[in-house]
Image (tube, rainbow, N blue to C red; front, top):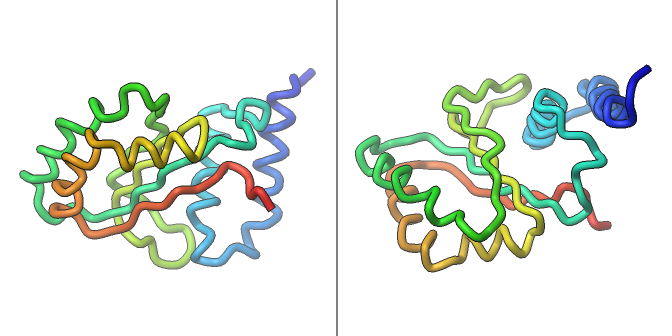
Amino acid sequence: MANKSTHNQLGILGVLAQSAQKMTAERWVIVLLVGIFGHIGISAAQETDTTAYIVLQYEVTDQAMYQEYIKGVRATQVGFQSTLLVSDSNTESIEGVAPAPRTVILSFPTPELAREWYQSDGYQQIVEKRLGSTKGNTTLVNARDPS
């Protein structure tokens, strides 16, 4: 007999399968997040209404400067309860055109902690290295739409 977590995961994957044909290119990040959660076993019971994700999608244009950013970014996350969920340098578009080949997804317990990390002195001291060595975007995504 399947446990409640398995039912939640199957429910999420079932919804994904049913709505895959209706997805637009702009919604592919949501498809990616749902697929990742199903793959790594995160159930709806583990996610709270306040969980937030920072999704970075970019192309590296200056590898040396980017490596300087990578060396310092982990230290900036201490104290913000963040978890690295995804770091993929070969993002595959299954519909439409992916905005960039690299996708990184960080999880935070609340949108406020995600914003505090991004705006922190520690991160702001190194973010210019990422911005100067990549082309792309950064998005704050709430686990559940509050409306």
